[in-house]
Structure formats: C-alpha cells, structure tokens
Image (tube, rainbow, N blue to C red; front, side, top):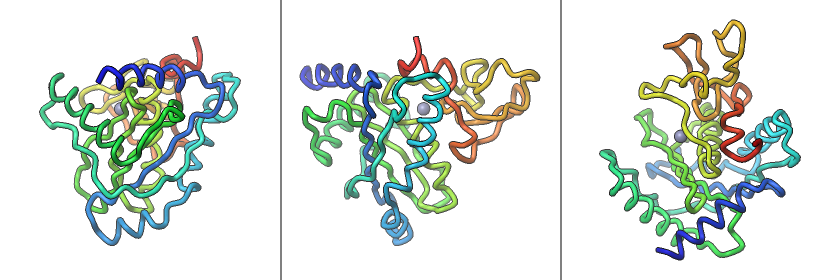
Length: 240
Ligand SMILES: [Zn+2]
C-alpha cells in the first residue's frame, strides 16, 4: 500500500509537467454484453478520440502553454472484466476501499510498470440502453479514469466530453457544478466575465453544461462548444 501511494505521488508530479505529451490509453469494455455494444467497440479506432487531442491542443494554445500537444490519446485493447462500481452510498471509508479495489483491478487488467508514470488509463464501459449510467470517475492516484458511456454513434461526441473531463480529473482538475448539476458561478463558467453574462456560448469542461441563466443550463453537444477556463488551467498546472 505504501509503495502504491509513493508510486502515485511520482505519477502526480510527472503527469503535470507538460514538457512532453501525456499518453492516454482508452480501454473499451462491453458493459451490457449486447451485440450492439460489441459492434460499436469493434468500430472504434484512434480517430474516434482524435477530437480530444485536437481540442486540448486548442485550449492549451489559448492559455499560452508551450507544449503544443498536451495529450496523445490512443485506443487500447478491449478489457473483458468490468471495473468495480463506485458505492452508491459513499463515505470516506468505502470510497478509499473502492479506490484500492479499482487500482488493484486496473493493475490486473492492464499491468503497469515504471515506464508508465506518465500514462493515463481510461476504462470506458459502454452501454447500449437508455438507462441512467453510473457516475464516471477520474482518480489522480494511479492516473485512472472510469467512464460510463453510450455505445450509440450519435453519443460519441458527448462521450468524448466525459472522457476529456475524467482525464482532466486525473491531472488535478476539480468538478465545477453544484448539487443539481448547474455550473457554479464563476468557476464553472467558460467565460465568467462575458457581458452580458447570459447566455454563455461555451461550457466549462469541468461543469459540462452551458449556462443560459443563473438556474438553467444545457449539456454541451461536443468538445467544440467546451472550454478550459482559467481556474481549471491553474489546477492542471498550465498557468501559475
Ligand atoms: Zn467530475
């Protein structure tokens, strides 16, 4: 356990230097065992996630980051087992226990080694149904993201928003929405200084929704209408 913690401290330092691209591997998982999801996964390729790298490069440029290509995202092999689910009634103790179980699960399914201090692993469990998906999570310890996504082609652009959101959690970004999912002002706004303030034109990536008034907002449809604001840029060590 001590070793794991020491190991992940190194990961946290190396992953946020931005001197070279941070490698991200997407491991797809068939979450409902359907043929529909299997076909969706079979059709995935590196280009399914190219939008994420392009988007983050654009945002890095806007914030004046010297590194022109912050992420290098590739598709990994399919993983046959499903990651442990985040407990529904969460408290500190079962969250810590879940985090340890998840890291052990990740180690067994995608063996890590020291050369992987700068590699983020994102496990994307795809579901075909319309049901509410379990929460997606990004862990800074171990650089692991767990995403629940829809295996529907029309959802791919929004899946990439969720994946980008969880990747940014692994490098230190925090959520910027309130209890009801409404973006928190000012940190959850892409442009909190905009005059007039509403409607906002973009969603802040760690809030995910575009505010149209103090109490109303809608989901961004793709990364194109999503931005990294100054608060998030500071959290991920892009700016001081
Ligand atoms: Zn989040």
